[in-house]
Length: 273
Image 1 (tube, rainbow, N blue to C red):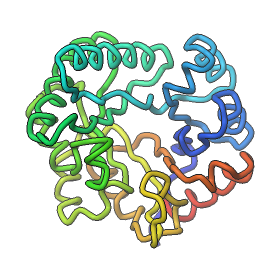
Image 2: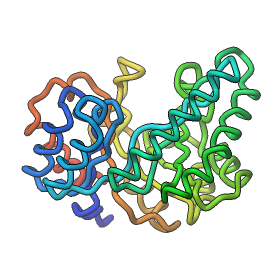
Image 3: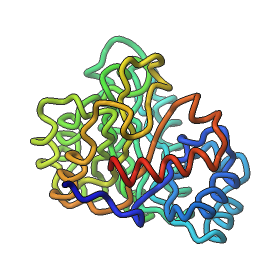
């Protein structure tokens, strides 16, 4: 029988409780003995960076990552520079909050030229590397499922993310493995092996059939078709032993009482991760 992941690695990715503000999410984690939280920037903006740090530290939580940077492609050089500047602010926020990882959702193409947009993604990350190094922050390229290519990311496979990481050739850059986005890939385990030493995050949820909503279609672990323990074992075999974020976009889960959601998350994590 596969040994489950320890609860000391469990992290609430804040989007799983999107209806909660940061204070409510932090207090919920503290009440349920969830040791980690992955913070979203719009939640930090709502109460301010200093208050966010004070709140998280005051409840004894650790920050697994900041979501999100990225969104590099844009139609004009001015817009692309604005994206770079916003990513620099995200790096500063990550450093202040005490995490070492900024998750990059790389962004869609502003037109039909995907090849050019992928070049802009790489150029954007390369531009950020010295600033990230100065602040002690790693940049995690998160490939998204191909169904999100039109509106969220032109980086859609772990192979693409690995190739970009190797091309940039910086220890500040790595990849994030989210089971929802990569489970289907016939080359997944080969690419996880190629990512050895550069995996910066591991995100879990499930793919329930049928999926009724493309954006809010993720489900709790155990409700779908993904072999999460097999993927977890692969990332661990290739060097990742950090926090495991539960990241779920699902309206029904968002609308549920906080305590119910967090208790269910802990139960499913223990049984299916």
